[in-house]
Length: 193
Image (cartoon, rainbow, N blue to C red; front, side, top):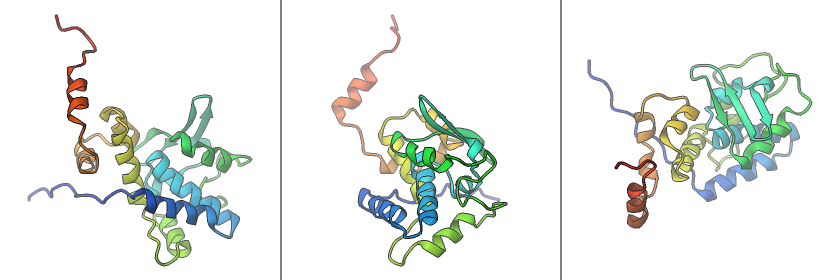
């Protein structure tokens, strides 16, 4: 038996594509659906959660303090996922006034199924717009790499242990400017002599 090579992955959303998704999410006519669309998008592109992790997230899993918002992810890849500053208010608003056991996405349901988020997307995303939770997560990963987040920290936030989980995203990260590259490699954190 031969191991399959790692997936080539999908491309991150462009800024224009992501803008259209946010316009859809915030612009839904039904307030509850808009809230859930914003939570779904915010969880994936704002904290790197998978669709299932967004569906499983409960109010008690959202930690809000003076340093920001973190999501305590359970399931197959338990971890603490810091939320981007620009997405923190989404979760602050989403959990306000809710019981700790309530689900953050599609509040009021009793359980999560593997299709909780995909059914929502199928039902509410209009033709001509593609909302992929996988691409939203990829966008978060690539943007964190572009921001220079250390690989170990990014892997912890993603809930992965194998570098190949990140390697496939590097093709979407621009090369360093040669002068910046040289300066970074030349810098010392500890003297060697």
